[in-house]
Image (cartoon, rainbow, N blue to C red; front, top):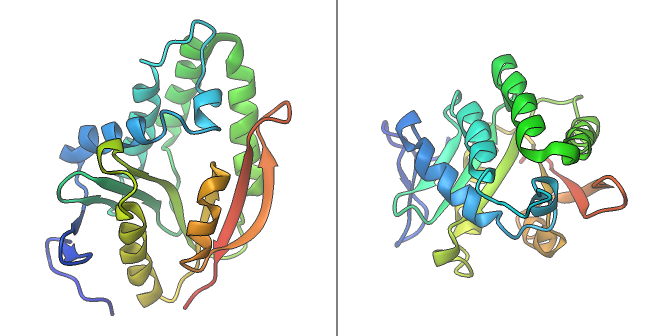
Length: 211
């Protein structure tokens, strides 16, 4: 088993400490994700509005954060530099009530763009492997003030060590091709890809076999 403490805190390296996020950390985690994905090629388009507004994006990310916080697999570096949001085997990203809320939000905030948004979610769902229990990395983000220091990848490596202790696989979708080689460096292999409707940004699906 991987080293761990009763409070869910363990050292990533000499400088960083990672802990399991609690419901009280929801705002903090959501802020990191909102800022980290502000210029993401996929999500900046999927959550785009005709008027160019971006204020609504935080509400979308908070919904997914709250969905993940139903499980003890959202991680946060103690200084708030980075967060990783995992769905454990058998879990779902959102509850039925949250899924219903997501539909209402998309119609309200995205207007005519809601149709492409829903189609994108359907493509995510269709690509997701179902034949083997696995950990699903829903979101991984680093606060822009701390980007470029490898903190997010250190947090990911820490999480994978815990998953390896369970001898389970992991799955993710990379919404930015610039990150694919980083995921490959920790053992993820390309499964396939799909695009945003209308031949938009490419999403690469990646799988990491159990250790």
